[in-house]
Image 1 (cartoon, one colour):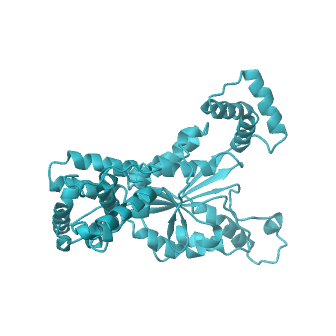
Image 2: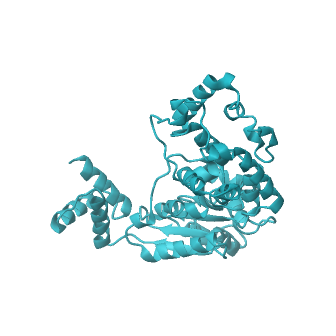
Image 3: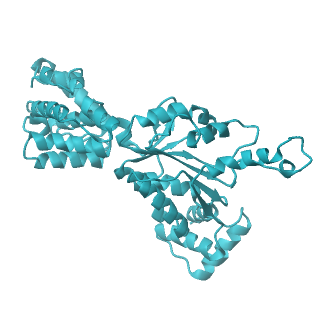
Length: 397
């Protein structure tokens, strides 16, 4: 392979494993490096092929970066340059060459196989590809759908001066949430519109504690990951960094981001709510079209308000201005979804569903007695209380 003829995947030249493949002097060093990569990445089978696919999907190149920034577009000239590179790499990608007769490299089984279904699918598609153009199209479609690197690997992120992928993100699905069908319908409808690049609103989920508001938002990242949705959770102090964060998300135009603010509320003395107001509506710079804000709160108006604030005897000359200020933040959320505490029947049904997922079915009377006894010694009826009951029941068996 003449790697120096690569046009857009030049980063491969700097990789010691790939650049030394044609030099038998480095055969042992390459084997050692590939075994190390296999154990860390969970690669199996032909390690050279697996490692090359990993480099093409993990490390940025001009094609993947262009597709991300342009919202999925790629120019014909750039595409031809990429096809040129794939032609050079095709003998490895099609698994048509062996690295001498080395069983460790050609057929390796790692201690822990980390199955990445996306990369497994890429390998299958390459095996069935008829020509170089089809192989190139496989990678282009992957970049369009998933991106590259962490954007492709993670469903949810946190912010630490850059996007940091959350490795152990809860695998919550909307179907795991019992009841609240109307609320889920509103949330899904708005999110579907957002993903389909139609007009969509920022969302405030408000209501009783433990009713599944946060879980509903988290589940969206799992439900719509394959369609380009990603979740970014921010803390209240990070709201002052919203302009910087928005600019970063703007660079990933082919993905849709929900900025998630959990359990949000403010004291009137806290200035962070003004940053949020400006980011949602009011800033000179427009919010990126690939970003929405979803927040959960137990407070309808988000900013704490007292009876004194509505007292005619308070010192402020224009009292109505003060009242309007406290409610103006929640008014900026175009869709407000209310979550009410479940009825007794709904509460018991949540417990029944959770136990059934664990292979346990209780008769109606025992379920009612045990569930209500637990409720009376805890903080009322809600999904969180139901989950705590199930955890205790499973732990005591």
